[in-house]
Length: 272
Ligand SMILES: O=C(O)CCC(=O)C(=O)O
Image 1 (cartoon, rainbow, N blue to C red):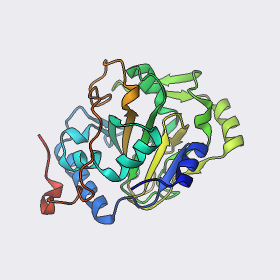
Image 2 (image 1 turned 90 degrees about the vertical axis):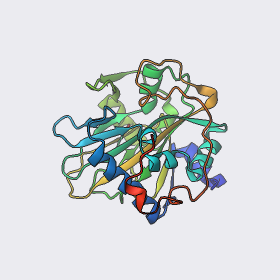
Image 3 (image 1 turned 60 degrees about the vertical axis):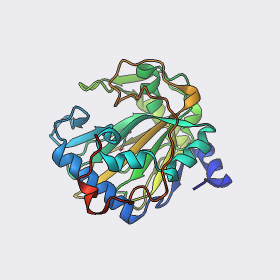
Image 4 (image 1 turned 180 degrees about the vertical axis):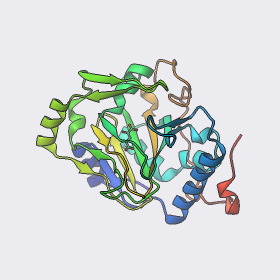
């Protein structure tokens, strides 16, 4: 699957482009079942990070290294090809994480740019990297969807932030309210809504955030955060599930890789 010239133009103008239902209902079901398996059987792994205020899982890192379905998603041509187009090079995985913003309990994210963490913690030289979000649930105005400030990637990296270090070692560099006020007056806020399977391609300097999920509906996004192989990270202080030191170009599997050969094992299969 290739992005059209107008989709590429939208990515450059607004800092993101949305591709509705890039993955089918059956593919989303396989990903959801695999997530359920991880939540039930892998709860004690260090890659699973809890909410600050309750025991719900806030983040799941590196699922491609211990779950076959997520390994296959990582190698799926339907998102790899557009990512290569946008970065104009081969790409490697910097970080795969799932944000299963739990019904009632899932917390929000203050406004930030992801590139700040990757530059400061991982020595990523430039912002030639993408956040790619695959929706595993319908994103509605009510379940804490991702929000972005269109065009804000054009600011480049904002240095004036309030670092919010987490006990897990993941620092988010919160942007100041005054800056957000000005950006929103200019660009507004887009809530990224859509059916499960929809996928967003975002510039890693795009300012984004979200509110908590107080609805009874789940709101899960899988983030495939990828970098150009010509822009490899230079620091290796964090565990590999935060910042993958393997810069090998991602090689796509077949278009049917999420479903082929999984059958009824889709909820249970885990790679070694
Ligand atoms: O998924 C969300 O609501 C926001 C996540 C986010 O901002 C992040 O993981 O950097």
